[in-house]
Length: 337
Image 1 (cartoon, rainbow, N blue to C red):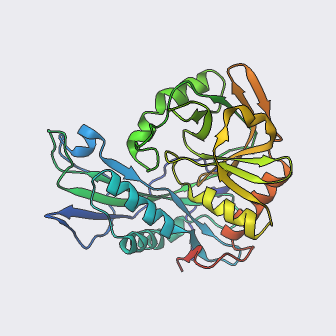
Image 2: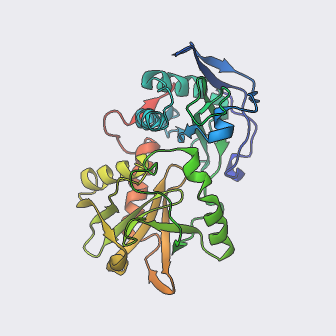
């Protein structure tokens, strides 16, 4: 299979249009058959539900070339299930989970020459998303929707190597109890833009959000779940109904327990116990694990080991599974060809 003539080793983490994307439309109470298109431009009414009331949700996953040359996706069934949950919460029609998987596979297969080669450090990012497309002027759900999948080759999230991140405890809230923090809705990310720009201007890489009810417990950052390592080598991650259920985090918990023999714990993590941990990382699709060097809590600095030995082992094991160097648990790897 011929690959595109791209300098794979110098790709940034940005959008590069490919030839094919998948489109399905929901009208008259049902989804059409859906299929591939070469049209990257979307035409909708100025009064579309997505434009007026932000009725949209999305997913993010990747396709890889493994060491033995296969093209695979990592746990796309969980992305399908999470999008279904997001749709239910936003009163959008659920795109059938089996059709979601078919759409992802079909889109990657149609663009297989865009999947970066093994060892390049690059991957094919996959973005499924859905939005209300019909006119809505009163506050209510749209009647018509569009589901789409596009792919784009991306380089490593951290160009030039991973450097430990510096985070700050945010004064603003990410999500309210019984709100939408647990789903992947576009509106959650829109409300975080002011705060992330401000964090960057103040010299921080990200914001750490605490629970909005009591402001005493750690939840997550604007774009990733957070994990901690205790002095005795236990993996701890915050538990809350307002945290987005990261597929990477869930996978790391299983890797820690089943592959590395670690004790794992999902529980409330108090703000005042941050200095009891030795390592800290942010986990998500883009970078797998991003090491944290410092969390600043209004002048109080808590320092961690960055890419410490345990975070490194977790990263190496999970990426080894994704790239085919380590045998994966049943059902984790979806082979495209």
